[in-house]
Length: 118
Image (cartoon, rainbow, N blue to C red; front, side):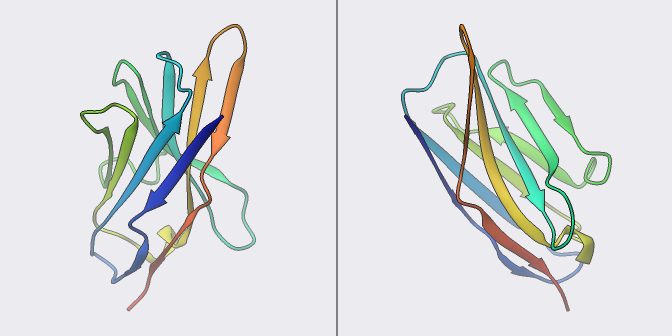
């Protein structure tokens, strides 16, 4: 079993910044990827950014150049630095881990609200 605990959401003004954190604990495979997804009201859940255990990253086009995903030194913590925030970034942000073994296991965090508004 794996637990994901997110923190760092809140209210920011347009053009401002927020940093999300997610700590994964439990039986974590060495080969894994950590990601951030978001879901805005009335919209589908979408991938924001993902980082592999080899530190390869990919981003949604809408956030590339503004958001940065990174892992902590312990490797089981992932951060999402969000700069130049826009109102359309308002959503619930979810942390996600995919673990690759004989099968792929996926776990989700509980979500953290990010609101961008003046």
